[in-house]
Each structure stands twice: as C-alpha cells, then as structure tokens.
Length: 242
Image (cartoon, rainbow, N blue to C red; front, side):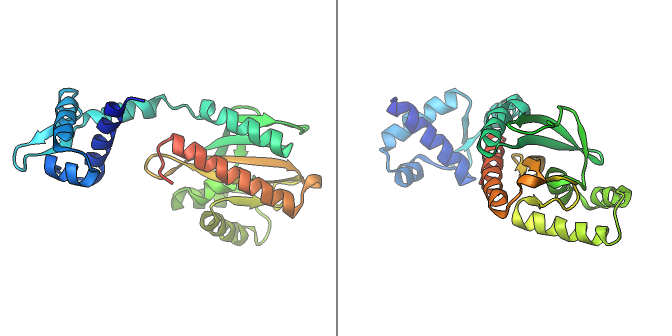
C-alpha cells in the first residue's frame, strides 16, 4: 500500500471537509503529520490542480477540478447497471420479483427487473400507475405536491380512497418505505424504498412484489429489510450520504 498516496488523500479530504482555507501548521496539528510531509503533499496536490494557495490567508483551498471529476463520475453511473446485481439478489432471496422504477409523468416506469418465481415479470419500460403497488406509492410519496395531487385526482379511486392514499403517502415518507398488503394492487403485495441522488432527492425506487397468496407479515418484514438495505446501497452509489 502506498502510504504517500494515502497521506495525499487524507490531506485533500481534510481540506475539502474543513470548508475554508487550511494552512500547513493547522493541517499538521489536525492530521498528526509532520509539517515537512504536509508541505510536500500540498505542493503535489497544487501541481495536480486539486488545491490552490489562498494569498489572503496563506492557506490552501480545494479547486473546482474536484467538482469536474465528481461530475464525470456521477454521469458515468448507470441506474440499470448498478441495480442489476441488487435486483438479482433480492429476487433469489425472496423468490419474488424485484424491480427498479422512476417517476415518469403520472406513472412509474420500470427500468429493470429480476424475477425468481412469478408468473409475470414487469417488462423494462412498462408504465405502472403511481397509486397502485408499493413502488408507485413510494415515488408518489416523494413527488412535489402539485404533481402528487394531480396523480391522486386522475386516479380512479373508490370512496375514501383519496384520504387513505394521502395518509399512506405521509406514513410511507416517514417510515422510509411503502408497504403494500394488497390494498390497491389486486392480487399483489410488496415493499418499495426510495433511491436518492447526491443531493438527497428521490431519483428512483427499488422494490419487490409477489402474489398475495404468498403474503405473510413475516415475509413482508423480510422484504422490508432487504429493500431498504438495497435502497441505501444504491443511493450511496449515486453519492447520497447515509
């Protein structure tokens, strides 16, 4: 392991986290490294365009080169590719259908799915009503208010359905996942959790669904654990801090 490289990463990360100019003396004290080491690392980072000297304070600041690199990494992350293994693991563990979807207008559009033991697998690109099933409802719970209200207004709901869905949206957002016990998606049950981007906004949802005749509270709880863990993992790949 290259200790010099690791020292450089420590110094760079510390400067970024500090949020202001940081000089050699402060870095030496806060990181517990000799000033001579800090000075050499800073000169290397400066030559690489990753930090710059601040004339006013004689400290060092991160440059926008880091932002540029971060954007390139972020743009290279593909939702379908990143979700592929996670969906397969969930499907094999539960024996049900796992899927990732994004909000597309008043629908949830399936981006990828994996099926272990189900008569019907959602196809890539298939559009599902937002108010039906856990994956649509968790996306609905995190939609902006005008969009959510339009989706609720356009949905064909039974008497009392609108009030129930509004309450469910609030509960799902607070819980961190949507639970479906066959309430609206006839013949199906499942769980879905939000996938967040680098700013913490909900960019997608990951979930699992199965036929209602295999439903039990134990299976739902197991699904919930798997899905929320997968959602956190997928979110971290898009830069969302835990």
